[in-house]
Amino acid sequence: MKRLLWLILLTVVLVQGFAFGMQAAVNYPPDNTTVVIDSTNLPIVWIEVGGDSIMRKTRIGARMKVIHNGDGRLNYGDTVAHPGQRIDYEGYIALRYRGNSSFNLSPKKPYSFRTLEQPFEVSENKKKVSILGMAKDNNWALIAPYADKSMIRDLLAFEIARPWMEYTPQGRLCELYLDGTYYGVYVLCEVVSKGKHRLNLDDPGEEGDALTGGYLMEVDINDDITYVSKFHPVSTNGYPYNDRYIQFQYKEPDYDEMTPAQVAYIKQAIDEMESAFAASTFRDPIIGYRKYIDVTSFIDYQLVNELGHNVDAYRLSAKFYKRRDSEDPRFKMAIWDMNLAFGNARHNYGYSTSNWVYNNNPVLYQNGDYMIPFWWYKLSIDAAYIIERNARWVQYREGNVRSDRLMATIDSLANELTCCGAEARNSQAWPRWGVWVWPNQYVSTDFADEIAYIKNWLTERVEWMDKKMGYTPPDPPQPKPIKGDVNGDRQVTIADVNLLVDILLGQKVDKETMARADVNGDNEVTVADFSAIIDIIIGASA
Image (cartoon, rainbow, N blue to C red; front, side, top):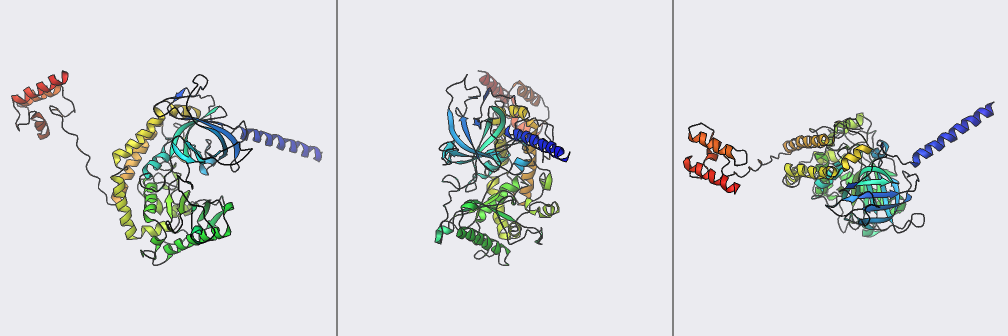
């Protein structure tokens, strides 16, 4: 009897295991698998895995084709009815899932892929290619905006950072088919990595100057091989949390490819940088932290993340890199992973427009979350750094973060998604409007509502940061007066004639209206102005 029960149990386990395997093989399809593209302004990405299961850590072989007929031209999903479309890229790739929370907490999965010379099963030799106008490389990502219902937050952050930082990834909105099923809007994106057109880091050598660079590290969770900092995170008054730690992941080179000398060197370099921050002389411009970090790079990283009030800033996906000493011995920062920024997250005050993210350690400690390195506290109490940061903010606000330019960037990105129906198709595949999705602070009713929320949130955030950093934006330029526009409605019509007649008959008006009524510019309002406005209207009609 016991043996029979064990056989039944084993059968159930095997059947369930088979079912789970079958579920994995369908590769997390969207809620609605019947959506198709007729035509779109966005590039169309086709990936074929032949029904194989895409894995989290291990890459599998796949083929990819990208259709892009050019900016301003439509791309068609039916390649039989529309032959001869421009193939931007077609070839072999090595594909896997990527991401942490974006993978674990979202049904719409992001991908990492490498472009290959030959099929993955034959050779894993990588091939550098240009995709959608982005510079040649072999390391790419397909970001899957899901919790970010606007689908533009990462790209918005990149556009804010681009004029200021040494390297900021390029990304292109696209629509994805996987094994013939429509998977929605993605961002085909460069990743922060070494490469001639990216960080352009030399391979580190074994000794001398060659040993000193280049390296890419990341403050992140401990899901990979990490190096634990010797210094604990601190509270807002500098009190150390001695039971909490900061982990650094090795990104370039990969830890498995590093020699003992290289591992020892980058550990020592980080130790020296952190020790300079921890020392009582940390403010000293010669022997303090400035010897070890590119201050402007750290300021830019901070301003972009604080502008977005990125709940993950400083502590997750916080990438920093180092070149060879002969080129530049200082650590620099790079922007990545801002899909939970711009008011998107309700946890850890992510929604707030009126506090600094770098002060979040008390709530992070209370919530048992990953914490912010102590460097950022030390920077916040250095008056010289604050002066430089505030001056840099002025440059931002008089550049691409000027309010009208910021709103125009949002409008441009949003228009890419709405002008030919990409957002609508994505919403059919992944219905989310009016539904709370982790970790949304605001539950938007539709795409326009989400974009309006981002704009309103950013307006409040910019105003708060202006006050904190002592910046007063100039009054917006006043539009040039229109001759003959007596009532101030920015047009010259019969309504202006009627108002001018009333003024000539003795109607009292304010000074601004009276000034506009002086159509001929002789500093008085007379019948001559009536003749002048009639000439304007007749001329306009002609």
